[in-house]
Amino acid sequence: MICPLDTDDLLLVQGPTSFLLVGSVHERFALCIETTEDEYCEGLHPGDLVCVSAPEGGALRAAAMILLLVRDHHFPVVALPHGHPGSRRVPMVVSAAPEITISCEILRGTHPDQHLLCGSPELAGLTLRGNGGSVTLDALPPACTIGYICVDRALVEE
Image (cartoon, rainbow, N blue to C red; front, side, top):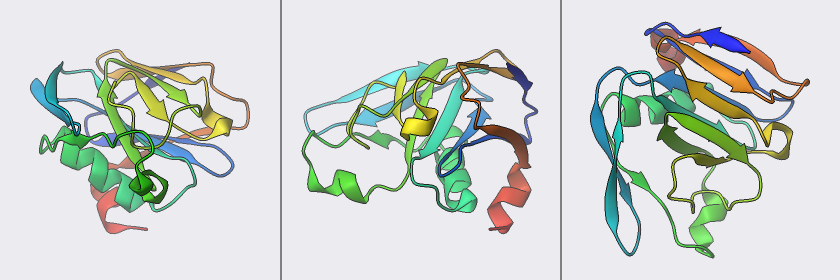
């Protein structure tokens, strides 16, 4: 499925109990990924995706804030080490890459590779691919719905 994505819109993929919020990168920048051992940077280009996963649901406003902090303000991404007790308290996670696959087999907040993002079992296997002005969704589960949210509206409404 190909979903057009305007610069002022965010794509909302909703499952019965979880969601993904997706935005397109507008400008080229280096996303810094911080781990306990190292720091490395991944180049992002216009048309790449920033995706926030809320495996247990949550506030769309919070997800929009996380997405915009990474996409528009270039905040770094932090990856916790495996087994870190804080990973169970992370309600939402973010990834940024040209293509992102949702997996329920990784621990939330512990995977530094940006092509994989922790998600709920109901969204597992979904792949999102940025195409400059659109997002291609492969293996979209049948129970999911697709919607759009205006960026400005997402920040003021719950």
